[in-house]
Image (cartoon, rainbow, N blue to C red; front, side):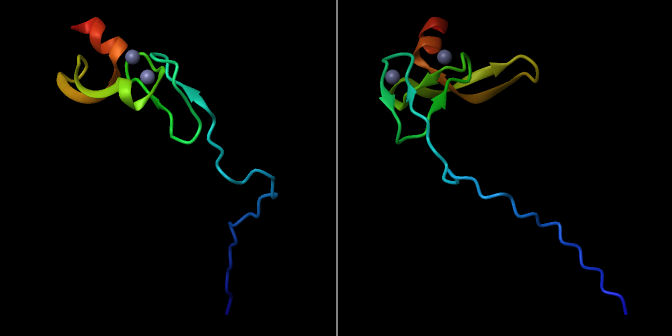
Length: 81
Ligand SMILES: [Zn+2]
Ligand SMILES: [Zn+2]
């Protein structure tokens, strides 16, 4: 009887800093800085935007002809309307 035991588990070298460190970010609209919350980016300009200046909007996708919900900053939102 042959028991083939494959151990694909590799112990990675323990590096210091195992914890996910949140890097501070700054809203490009109001310069609000935060390090405790997750940074969010605008789906149109890909710049970091705070919760206040980011809103979900329907964006028309030319490729598939569908409206998709995207996170849009007020800078992009106001330039469109
Ligand atoms: Zn902001
Ligand atoms: Zn934007």
